[in-house]
Each structure stands twice: as C-alpha cells, then as structure tokens.
Picture 1 (cartoon, rainbow, N blue to C red):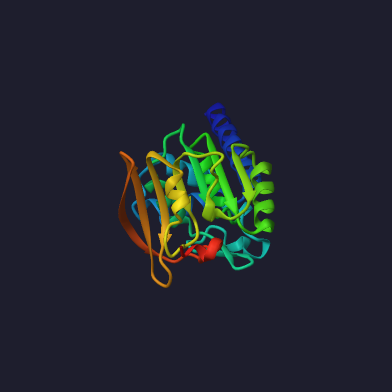
Picture 2 (cartoon, rainbow, N blue to C red):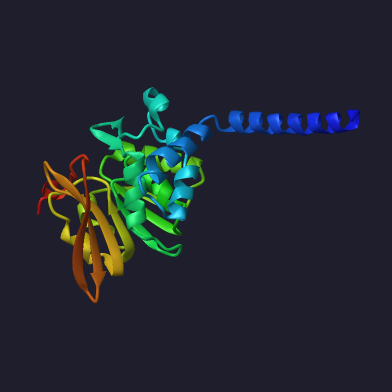
Length: 237
C-alpha cells in the first residue's frame, strides 16, 4: 500500500510540475483556449485547421501593452493611428471563408498588428502583407519575425494596387473596408481564387469574391464593422 501511495504521489508531483511549467511558459494559454472554445467554436467555426491556428497564435503579442488584459476578449482593440486588431471571431471567420490549402499563396491588404498574417501563416506556405502605415508595417514585421513567422513578407505601401510582382494569389484578404474592391486586386486573383473583404462605407458586409473561368462571382456573409481602407482615392474608385 505504501509503495502504491508513493507512486501516486510521484505522478501527482510530475503532473503539477508540468502544469506549472506550461503556465509560467505561456501564462495566456488558458485564456487563448477559452477564447477559441467560447468565442469561435461555439459560434460555428468548424475548420479544424483554423481552430488549431487560433489556439496557437499568441494574440497578446500583437496588442499594445495597455490592452494586454483584454488580449483574448471577443472585441477589436486599438493599436494606434486609427487602426485596430480585429475581433478574434471575425479573424477566424474570414480565414475559414478563404478555404485555404497548404500550398496557397495569400495576399493580405492591411497588415495592422500582424495578427491575421500570423494566423494565415499557420495554414499556408507564403503570405504577402501590405500596410499603408510605415510604423505598423515595421512593428508587425518585427513581431512576426520574433515569433518565427518567417513565411510572412510585409511591406509598407498602398494596398489598392496589390503586389503585382508576386501575383497571382490563390487568396486575398482585405482587413479594412473599401467602398468598392480595387480592380487591381481582382486582377491579381488566381483562377479558382477567393477574395474576402468587408465592403461598404457606413454599413459594411463581408463579401466573398470567387474567380472561375476568368469570371468573378460574389456572395455575402455577415454585417461587420472595419476601419475604412485608405490609399488611392480612399479606395473608392
């Protein structure tokens, strides 16, 4: 009996030590898993690859210090200069709607904090991201590199014109709201590619553009609220 008690005690110590290590190594892990369970899975996200990516990417690394305590809340958060880090559910939904394959090449318009790019990098081989605000582009690239997301390339520029040198793209995601999707982005979409965008001015809807046989079809998802897309004529052409 004493031997059995000692064995159980040893197992308990190992388990507790392991838990302590995980907690000290990543103090936000429990919050992140709870976020995915309550804010994402329960709201209908079913793609297991997307769920795993949301469980893995440390959102707290992408928020500003004064919002650390809110890093895993189901809400967008300010990151400065009139921009925000998107609501986790919306990030998951937009990512799922892209129906990404591992070998896809993705273009993101509006790097912002870099959080969405990190989620994409968990799913595909290469991500190209354009940010119009130089400060955010530099900060996002630094965070992504520090966290090991070397498959993401960030540049500062006007996303209206896309990234023609790297086109075509299997998927394009726009994380700011244009009144109308810029034509250069539709032109850079590959055959069978999908483009996700929060489209509209005062009232925005998440729209999915699909290219098949050279023609574009459009479907809608849910009402959303994003910061306006800035750039060439404020992206209203």
